[in-house]
Amino acid sequence: MVVVTAPGDHAGAAADAAVTATAGCPLVVRTADCPPVVLLGERSVGVVHAGWRGLRGGVVEQAVAALVDLGDPPRVAHIGPCIRVECYEFVGPERHEMAALYGSAVLGSTATGTPGLDLTAAVIAALHTAGVAQVEDTSGCTACDPRWYSHRKNGDAERMATMAWLEEA
Image 1 (tube, helix red, strand yellow):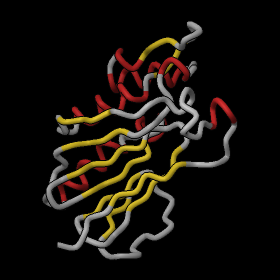
Image 2: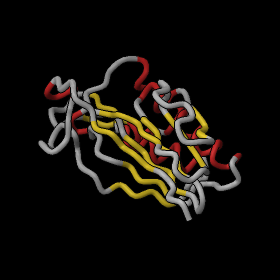
Image 3: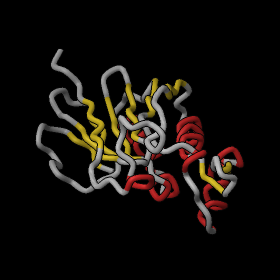
């Protein structure tokens, strides 16, 4: 998680989230199947790569808290294209760790009936816990929609970039 305070600050940093309240600072996260999240305040913005490991580590909540610390809590969050529960087989103890953190709504089944993890439900729960009430989720499944890259379904090495910035006033 990085807080960007000037253009070029933390450029190329390996982080699952970046936030800023400074105009002219583009923020980018790259994803394939993990949910990208854009956080929008009145005078601030953030981007989050919200995979299950990051969610388990509180990356969404940390990004929201960083915007609060900048004096401008996010009023809306947008979730981008990501793998959906019907295509995301997920087994192991981490599945129940995620349910303990974000509730049983994150537990689901794939289209073939195997255990799945609903990353979108986990992101929404994390956002609500962090105080973001308005969440927009209008994108599709990376594994079902050929417009998006999917490492899990196709083994794609390519990634999508989610970018946000504040324009100069």
